[in-house]
Length: 473
Image (cartoon, rainbow, N blue to C red; front, side, top):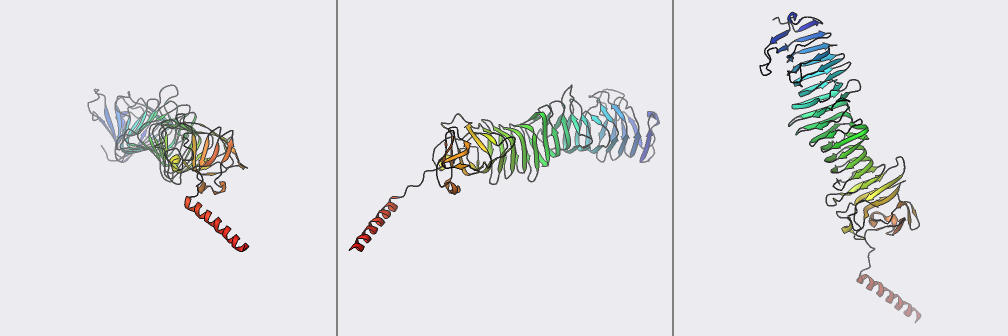
């Protein structure tokens, strides 16, 4: 055939009238499909098709080192999801689509170093697999998958309101990686049915992504998920369940204030995270970072491992039911309660009450480096009933409302708080009463003068008495 690298194909042109630049190669796809009516349509130049087309059963556009432009192609249906895919993109292959497009009943579309770009209108498809780039998809249908394989697949739902995942009347759709691969997600994704975000031995990156759970609860499967650019998790009445190792990279932000999030794996925050109602049944690691929670609940198996400079801010209630005292470390972190709908908060404590035991009371006992309750009111409760007495040990405490010997903005309800007197000089090492029972008291008793000191003190008195007698003489 001829060697022209640009072809205009007019809608309605018969397949046996294809012009130069498009190679029609029946039988070259392979015989593993068990059907004689198969073949490749090889695109190696720059080919443009205007208007709707109908692809014969078992035929595939094979685009390598070439470009296929589809303008308003409408609906392109494969024979079935087990037949050859409608498109195969190799290295240097580009598929550019404009206008409303639906790729129906097709096997997953392989992208082996190529790109698919959709710019205007809607673009619905079943599945994509491989490495390269896909942008502008507006719907992954029920049962569909986006899977990175053999490298990095950049998937950007950047047209209109983004991409819906699954079917509201059918099944969900999944976002997957595979071993040695990266699925990089940007744009907006909205679940119409439950689905999975599954690393599968690879990596999934939230790279400026907004993921809306809607009324569903998509699952973040075990594996590595990294926030590499500011991203958002949100929902209406649904939420996210995570068994993943979710890392928020240094300098990046994850805004999940509009979603509920249950962590059954690991969250590692090295940047900034804003959470809605957060339940931690796994491990939450911070180093150093700021995290804000609407409500924070820690399950019996949950733990927080914080570092110097970390800040934990709670707008609502902090319910700590953890029994993992040996794995918990917040001794250098700050806990601050903030005003939301109210300035009153429930703080369920997990630490044991060892009394004024000094370092013994602070070690492996859910101790916080700093507690800031400026402008707030705390109501203490028992979050760990397995303790023989429950208390809070804190190095430094800010924002106390003091009236005489009473703390008026902490309702102790019979529970005690122990503080380090060397870091709270304004408290003068005194013990204060909490509202409704309990005390705020130093974490160790006031030092008793040593015998030598007492002896010197006594000797001093005797000397003073001797001076007085000599003066009288």
